[in-house]
Amino acid sequence: MKNTAADILIDTIAEWGVEVIFGMPGDGINGIMEALRKRQDRIRFIQVRHEEAAAFMACAYAKYTGKLGVCLATSGPGGLHLLNGLYDAKLEGQPVLAITGHHFHDLIDTHAQQDVSLDRVFADVAVYNTRVMGPSHVEPVADLACRTAFAYRGVAHINFPVDIQEHEGGERSRRNIAGHTSDVFARSARMPADDDLQRAAAVLNAGRKIAILVGQGANGAVDELEQVAERLGAPIIKTILGKAAIPDDHPYTTGGIGLLGTKPSQEAMEQCDTLLMVGTSFPYIEFLPKPGQARAVQIDIDAARIGLRYPVEVGLVSDGRRTLRQLLPFLIRNENRAFLEQAQVGMQQWWALMEGQGTRLDLPMKPQVVAWELGKRLSDTAIVSSDSGTITTWFARHIRAKRGQKFSLSGTLASMANGLCYAIAAQIAFPERQCVAFVGDGGFSMLMAEFATAVKYRLPIKVVVIKNNSLGMIKWEQMVFLGNPEYGCELQPIDFAGFARVCGGTGFTIEDPAECGAILDQALATPGPVIIEAVVDPFEPPMPPKVTFDQAAKFALSLARGEPNRERIAFTILADKVRELI
Ligand SMILES: Cc1ncc(C[n+]2csc(CCOP(=O)(O)OP(=O)(O)O)c2C)c(N)n1
Ligand SMILES: [Mg+2]
Figure (cartoon, rainbow, N blue to C red):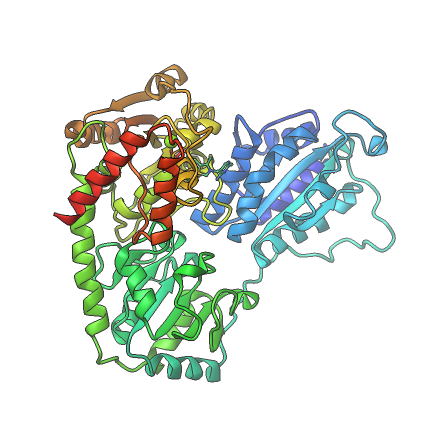
């Protein structure tokens, strides 16, 4: 039997090391599905319930493994559903290949059914974007799509008319001579120039109060970061995507930054005279030192990102780990340890505050308690995925990262609904590791049918749903940033533990903080997919590390302007403040 064009596609991407494809069948990709059916031993097809989930999974698979993430969707609506997850990959710089179908090639643009020009739709999201014109077109474009996704760390898209998928053979055009393309992946080993390293070291060696800000590009460089921080006497401040870069109990880190960060991180940023940025494009520039306050050096794999957020003096273009290693021999020990010591004292107080919040026994249960208790119990190699909402704050602050764990979420797109999908992808990639999702009820309910996917593939993921029956984050934003009473934020409650059971998984409910630890122990030890529904206080605010006068004033205004829950909110906040003070 001859190879079809779809066979060629799947064989070609298999050569690129693709082992898993996330997607949903449809009549626009039946030829591709048949090629996958025939190659089940080489490539695993994971069937999702919504194509957006497939794209999130492909993104997370790339994030957690460094391999190419692949998703597949049918023509028209299937492809359109992929978009949000693909933007997640684009914004986070992850190599993802999206394969979509189109209907019969000679009916394109004739008002036929599902006649959506997905290649045009994907023009903005993709770094490589093409439509297959015939069987002999497949191999060259598939090679180039994979190579481009890796090389430019983005989304490559192949749109494939359904009839061409089934074509066998096919004449090559005169100029498309066989054997002229390759599936060799050439990695870039870009090195910073020696004189740039020396200039960078000169800036850093002249500093007294040096801070290091790390992002996603510093993950995997824990030893190097430790050595550089030790040499420079510098606290390491972590953006949320850099949470795994250094363990939270490390004496050199002040944890997160920004609205969901820590007070010592913010103080280090406010006071430092020198800043070393490693693999980060952290967007909230108001949390960075003021321009002119600090001399700065930036390490980034992407030359175009140097100086994007801060007027740095030197940029080093390479990956974080390699550059830190190369920089180290040029660095002189900073004998001014007071800045670091001040950060360390600040962190002792911060952790006491976090522990206080994480061990409270009031009812309704505080969400911080769930994060705190979960963090204590996670295995040393756990992979923890989160979502967007107030839960991101608890995830960032109260789950203490240990060495060897991985953490991620939709950091730059800041989408909801990714958390469950990320956990599924993590478990597919690492069947032996503990894979946990820490999500809100709003984000989870957007794509909760994917829990059935976890059941179908027997993935023992553990999903902690923080149930506050509200789009909590937006409620607080309306009040604190705008001074408006909350509107449109309440959620119809769902019995998530019951949902887990009807899907064929296991469900637990935690309501009493005194039982939180014991129930989590039981849930984490339960085989198979599990949902742990944690019913929490909807009035617990995600307080910024330091409240500004403007925020407090706006907040007071929202209460005065008729915030429906003002009494409960005022009480909760006041009680929290009093606790912080005593
Ligand atoms: C797809 C998408 N829609 C809307 C938003 C805006 N948004 C950000 S956080 C949030 C609320 C999240 O609610 P939930 O998941 O329940 O978490 P909580 O804030 O209650 O902890 C919303 C609506 C978003 N980030 N992404
Ligand atoms: Mg919620």
